[in-house]
Image (cartoon, rainbow, N blue to C red; front, side):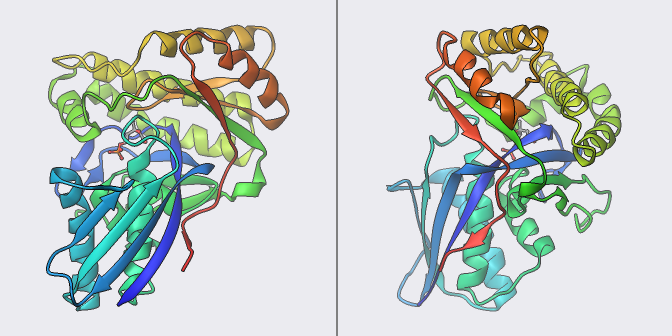
Length: 326
Ligand code: PMV
């Protein structure tokens, strides 16, 4: 039996991905830029075992079923094919945070799975191949292969070989924080794949979302290289609100926000009017993430923690890429 354990951190998109150019290969219609976090993570152990008659997948102590299990098995199948081995695998995976709530558990989950499964099968894969494996499970997972500030181009090639993550800045190159204001644990009503398809198919704003994306990618990458938080923050908020506006205009509309989401957005605006550097971003869930310089993070976190409905604020710094533990 060959066992390997890997850990990957979640990442939060600063320039968002929403929409696919190829559903089967899970290729994005737009590029994205993210920050890999330091503490929210998934640890995954994979063991290929001749005695198993089928893959077993346990997520946070509970056997995975249906679509969730299929997505894991799809990654294992490609690893088996690549390694030329047929053994079934036992997969055990743990998140240190709630699953499917907009905290990007699929990103860290599939990055950790790709790395652990490849290593357990005896493969030493480059970033491009690990990223291809991770992408089978989730479009945002390739970004968690790398640490720090990461760019994932949409690419144009049909096989996705030009959709490979690359580092913009390593984790210790820029001392910023992302504050995660957790305001509910409900699993999301509309999964991201369904939400993206609905937006692409019915939103009158989808085309503009795609057409204006390249400029956001360029502006955000330049701002990160220049360590310009106000410049970056402006693009981060614009990309976030454009994504949510395009999905709210879908039929039926998609709304991931709750009351506390809006209150945090307003509080961050007040903080900015008071001279602080704080900028919001929101994914497929109600939590608001706030980008700010390290030196202002305690003051901003204290204010956000007082907003009605906010359960806790997790302070994240730029973190490392995927790690093999055993
Ligand atoms: O990778 P998925 O299917 O979980 O989709 C991610 C979508 C967003 O989190 C809303 C945006 C992003 O780029 O992470």
